[in-house]
Image (cartoon, rainbow, N blue to C red):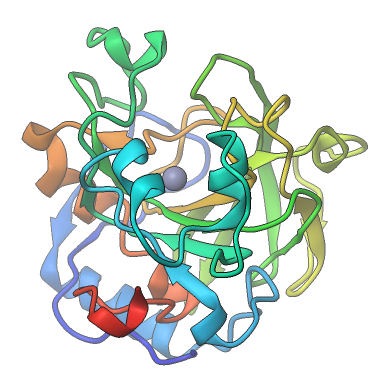
Length: 269
Ligand SMILES: [Zn+2]
């Protein structure tokens, strides 16, 4: 589960401090530096997941309805959301993939508004640029590394993050930010900007759908190499900005571990 990504992820130049508009210099060299920094770091698990065979890798590329209608392995939480009974084959845990095109999934007003801009990202956004880990509401979420809380809050729009926390870290000299979205209200209570979080510290828990933007309980985990302006990141981006997003928001499996491989295989269904 802890196998690392290797190879040619590109990185953006690390930006200092809180200047959200800092110019971004993208270099392959820095990309490799970040990948190497992650590979050299012993991150704490984001979520205590059971063995991989109990974690369903979702295919959201044809939308949420198609995913729920799949014959085997559909997570119980998604079946419940669709008001379908759990069955003996449904899984309690699932993973949603990074850099996945998810057509017909982001249909609430906030996504329909192509002029809404988040950290320079706009347009019709349906390429998922974070990593989802789904399971029961209340599931604890742990900080993968020591850092500080950069921002937190409540993004209440339908389809948005609900309660969300962004932390800032320096991984082997490379500054990055981590977003934890769709949390419960208790996750943001008693938090303060600048608060130190220790590696492995419980920083929150999966929110239920009434407080997480209306989704089945899960955490959306996103890694950024540019400083977010506030407690937000574009969790999905347009096809036109996909390449840029892959640079600025690297594959979260660098930190969360290889929770899935790029191609779905039959034994994952
Ligand atoms: Zn997500």
